[in-house]
Length: 251
Ligand SMILES: [Zn+2]
Image 1: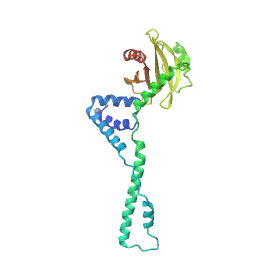
Image 2: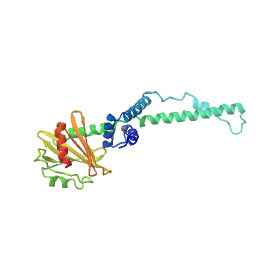
Image 3: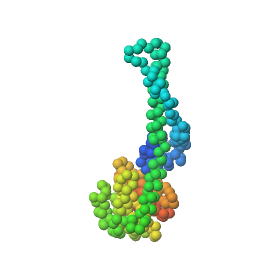
Image 4: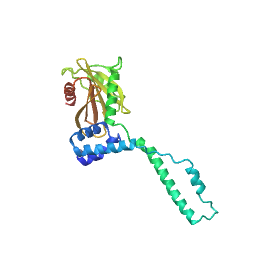
């Protein structure tokens, strides 16, 4: 990805408009690109300044009455000097309206949380919820030929399901879950006493993206994209073993 593209994406990143994988890419990229890091810092600083500045001003009491009172009556001839004053008043009123609308609307546009961090938090919350008694699986089976067809008709895509018992990551089952405003497939695996949730949902672009790992609240997550789908593996398992598991899934 060229840096011109990244610079454009930074705006979308700050607005929370990028999908998870692209947000993570930006976060990764700014670690190694001083130009883009500077641009991100500039944008964030600018927005912070907007947010903290007290830009919302009330029009003084009686301004409306004053404007109304000074409007010419149709039949009256208004002296030139007074007409000039009226024109200025009209301009001032127009500016006041623009300021009002701008700074009432702006605060809702700026200050959106960073999407990848929110998404990571949502995934960790979902993972923790799944560990509550009775929430882990909707279909409990170590057989991939049972788990895969179970998703038919429940999600509009077909998640790849494989058992890795021989490699030390047995399949436990599957579950229908909800992430980022859509139904997702959750595949459940186990490594010793650690549960691994693999969330799968379709992605419009067919591009493949290499795995990226992040940690949040003591949980490790690895995201990647392949075959028109997003994947996120999450667990309290250490990163090395989680990566080992992701390598198996990617084969
Ligand atoms: Zn760059």
